[in-house]
Image 1: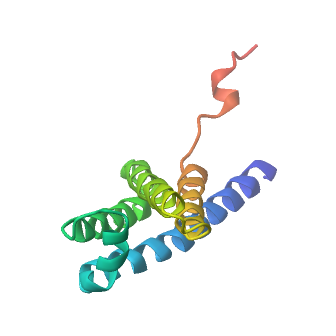
Image 2: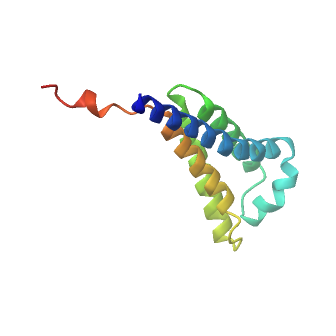
Length: 131
C-alpha cells in the first residue's frame, strides 16, 4: 500500500510539473506562430532570420503536444522542449540579457522532470533474483 501511495504521488507531481512547464511553452509557441512580428526584434538581436520564429514556435507547440501524451513519445517532447529551453537560455545570456534565459530554462527543467516522474521505471524487485 505504501508503494502504491508513493507511485500515485509521483505520478501526480509528474503531471503537475509537465502541465505547468507545458503551459509556458504553449503560450510562447502560440505567440510566435500567431504574431511572429512581435518576436522579430528579439530574434534580430540574436542575429537570427525572421523565418526561424515560426520554426521555434512550431517546435515548442509540437514539444508540448508530445510531452503531454501518455505514451513513449512524451520523452521526445521533453527532449524537444529541453533543447529549445537550452537554446533560449544560451541566446539570452550570450547577448547580455542576463536573467531573461532563466524562465525558459526553468520551464524546460519542469517538463523534463515531470516526464521523468511520469515514466515508469523498472521495479528493483523484478530485477533481483527470488530466493
